[in-house]
Length: 78
Image (cartoon, rainbow, N blue to C red; front, side, top):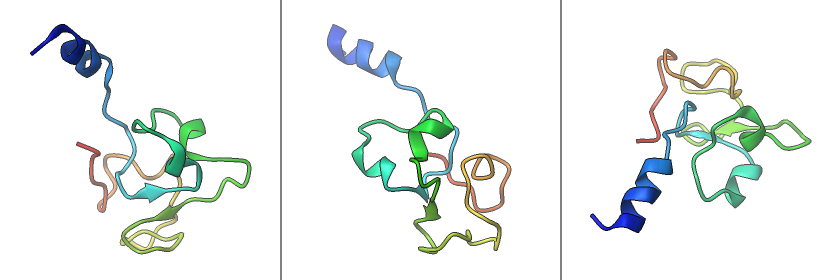
């Protein structure tokens, strides 16, 4: 691996959020979200890409604080 590639991979961190949480703001990101502010805009609206609704496959509300490891429908970015 060349030096630029190893530096890029070293700076990349997996997101703590489910890969299916979506918001308008995420359409403009080039890296996985690391904090709630990376996901939510002023509207604070997000949805699940699996259900296309504000409820996830488990019937619970989609929100950055809730869409994390431990939830039955969670899938990691990696």
